Image 1 (cartoon, one colour):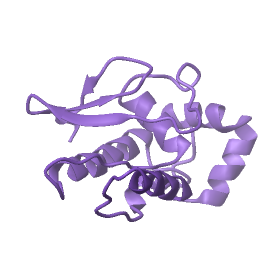
Image 2 (tube, rainbow, N blue to C red):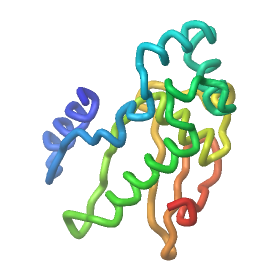
Image 3 (tube, helix red, strand yellow):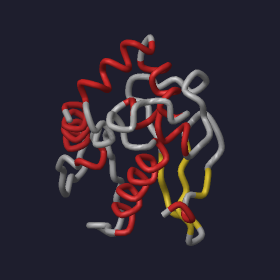
Length: 150
């Protein structure tokens, strides 16, 4: 949330207009059903990336995390709904989330494994509409049409 505030402040200082900003639970760590258990399993796994790989393989306790495919589709629905409900004629929506969410969507939707597509500071995914379809892309690969996943 602090990152989003800094981005918005800088945009306004350069003459941009901000129409709204607010936290969305759907871009938080909603997929952690039991955060204490999640952190324990992550620690026992040897860190974030090994933990995420286990989650993606459905090897994390079901009472700790929502299934990865379900979580990824929920994130896509949140982003798609933002694109369907513009508040201005021309706009850019900046949705800030956690590195775990970026790893999740990259792996489950874009097929970019965590050990190959490392998440860096201010890393991003881009969702956009083109030709009546919804697309998602990261700088690690080509755009993927995600319309059918919604």
